[in-house]
Length: 267
Ligand code: R5P
Image (cartoon, rainbow, N blue to C red; front, side, top):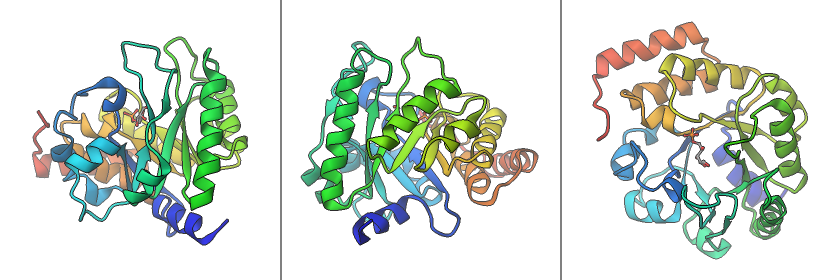
């Protein structure tokens, strides 16, 4: 692996712990004005100090994030569909040249294993890896799941392994029963998405279970920015990811912080 690739990867996965807290705020690329992200700049600003990377689209990066902000960016470079259409029918939306101009630490693209467009999305991943390798840019493959797909270890394990085989440097998937198997069978680091908003206590347990069962961290969005206490939430998730804080202590930490900070939910 060349120096540039290693250097960028070390900006995503912290070398001190081998873990990462990625803050995902790319949802608008197919969901439009997602709850909590109506003003993405306002939402992310207080969260950035506690995130290792920010995952978002080119448009939101350019228009809502101060260029002087010193946070590594993982840029979503796939899209072209909306919640109203066929989500699997994505294409690549950002050139590598523009991603480099935006000084990204990595690029992210979704694959839709099991969909009728599986081949197209997998070949798009392979193409992106080919191009990214040329410039030393890590690729995060996002294992997207359709509404009718079971999020079990067999399916997620299949999707993660294929992403790794095609050259992804990092894979994002969902937590599931037998998650250790998914990680064991995937030769590159795995992070978990948080999924739909669930109570904070459950999201804390989810984060703990994921990292203690082999994930290198989280790429979490809604369970942070849709919390009534997003800063308290990301600070707590950070302690879990980087210090293996146990769920009971993490819950104490969250409730204490939330009480002290009296945060306002983002409108
Ligand atoms: C979905 O495809 C997006 O890439 C999100 O970044 C991802 O799902 C993580 O966000 P959340 O934790 O809200 O699921």
